[in-house]
Image (cartoon, rainbow, N blue to C red; front, side, top):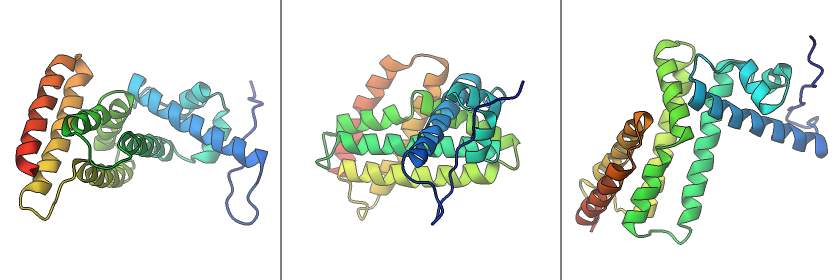
Length: 208
């Protein structure tokens, strides 16, 4: 059966669509990105095809491919999009700048649990086996890692000119990632709370 749902015009430049059509295009793109993350988290790479994502987003496969020509483009863009959204949300929690360290540590750990981290994990595993996907995922992870580190330094009020401080902040992020991995298989809430409390004390001692 022919899918009668139309594709979306997502051109840029002087002849780009404007007004309601452009707004619909942005909404379609966002729905595709959110659906792609949900599919990766729930079904893994093998079960997350462009057709599955398009169906979940409520658009045609042609519309999905208009916005994202390849499967790799779709899923790397999806994880990047949600990572940026989560980074913005993290900053919004602490608009006044440095905050109480236990709250900051808990918020950072929360970045590595839930659907986003599960989706990113599936993307990493796929990239280890898919040569065409690996460069995009490697670049994405480097960019997300740098941004998360900058946010952590800002929120913790850390002075990286002091020897060992940069490594301490990176250790916090590595620990948070490890807690996210542990949470993939079992509910690690109780142990995670104790680890967050201990890391807050470590940061107080290391950062002053």
